[in-house]
Length: 521
Image 1: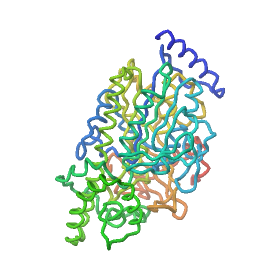
Image 2: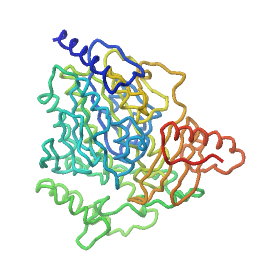
Image 3: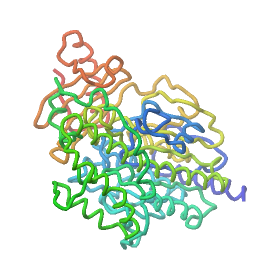
Image 4: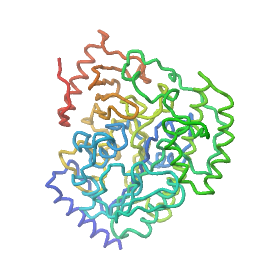
């Protein structure tokens, strides 16, 4: 069998050499094909992953990946929104390069070059299970089953490769793991290398946990973040958003405080979700929530008391949903270990963006501020990659595609925006590594009303330009103001820093051929 796999790997390498006429950035030599398992969640933020932050959640299975590999401490997205982020990941291109800018008006061009297509052409078995959220159907996969749109936490629908819609019984996070393991066990050709993408809906709004976890964390009380009552002075775009826990988090849809005579903008959506529960699930749900609902409305909370109640309800629901996710990642890791796949498999865990857990008084994402631009990224490395601990270089989700291509021995296209992370996984610290990241958010007007903006982030500085129906710049010193509370733009002593950052920003816009640019003064 080893001889057969080595012969196969020779074929994979040969096929890679003819792909797209692309010149290799950095070829990698290996004597056997490496598998790739890419696990991605939705809206999981580093504050809620214990290998990054121990204040709130415990995530032992996710931490296991970091403990047996590397943790990226400066990992960011290019566009903090689900669909665009996924398009950036699968193409290795910024939104201006892949054409998928936002969740409201775009359909992903599934005929364009993608990383799964390139791996498939090179002899890899490719599979996708779970959330796709790119409107068009997946291409470049030997097997896929995806959720329609955002998907449902309970008894969810799946779209199959035959374009049939089927209903599965149970809790979505567990079902996605079941389907992933089933493909690994019975669906693939075990003589070929594989790339499996496990895309969870968790931890997307409205944070609905498995009914077996409903009573977890009810004894926990969380202090409000220091900047929960942010007044957004000097930041008009931040003041104009609609993602405040106090004002915009719906007590019925988001926090499940349903009542026969209670209605809200989103209460109809919540009724639709409840309608998916079977009798057993609904009984568990009502047994838990009915006393909580009765207590909430009897107290008539206002002001800071209401803020603290909503924040704590949000945190508990998020953590309960996270518990299943962490358990299921552990189950998948156990399968890989028990079937002798870990030594020959790169296992990657990331989220499609970060999320606000009360910072600035918010939930959701979208802004270029740290909590949403930053994303957790940990990798359990295959045998032969001995790097352990933290990777501190600036990396972005456009880098995943070239990394997977290079670790598979497939040539990386020269025009791909991202760069392979393999040198970092080998323990190298390339002197020419990027010193700045580009970000661009386009979805406005839309849900949460975050203004369009682009910007540049270095290891210390962040410069943001809000545009479209606003023309406003913000500058932050991340070393002295990590919470981004003090906009320094316009202060005379930072004029040189602003000019340096504007020049760097414009250079990145030109490098990535973004048609939306500013003009240097």
